Picture: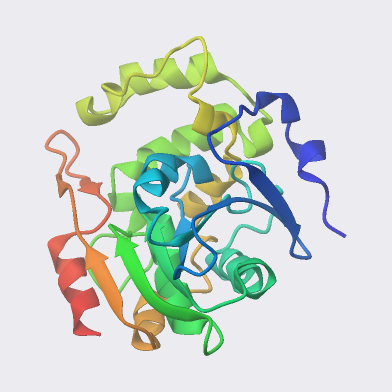
Length: 274
């Protein structure tokens, strides 16, 4: 039996938003989501990136709700959805969405995911049962770059984001068990490259999305367990739906030589092979 998220995370951190929130029991997790748009419109599932909750899509939902039936979700370990210590893998999270689609959407859906949500969109386009996914949008996903052993381009520990994830794990801890926010901000501002040190973190209080985030996600990424069971080349070779990949900011941080961004040009080109 899953542990209620309120046991692992305080419920008094949450704030209200412009759309009503709902909960669905998917077995191991209770998933939080928001829905809007005409029931007769095409279904569009919005999958946030790491550290983000469903409401990161709120402004986009306002622009799209007249044309789509929109479902924006909190993944396990984010937002109001269940925390699952020791169970953060892309396969587990992908299967949460496989259960969500027939349980809540009840029709074939287009999937749109940002960053790690884009990897999950690719996962669904490859591994979801036939008939669940119509098409997928992968918005700047860390394909290949999130892997510790990759067949293309930089590895996770060769990226700038690995420094931030390491700090999340060290100063915040699994389920915020450390909770040293002031120490985290000091470390960011004094020890990290300028690109990260310039982040406008308030030492007095974390941003709302981080309050809702289980930092064990970060540890699963830096230790390699998040994607250990999901080889990206093998996954992409199994894609069965139309896919649109978008590719945004990227480069090399001059002070460290670490990759900045999610996806390099080399990696984006490799995705295009499939």
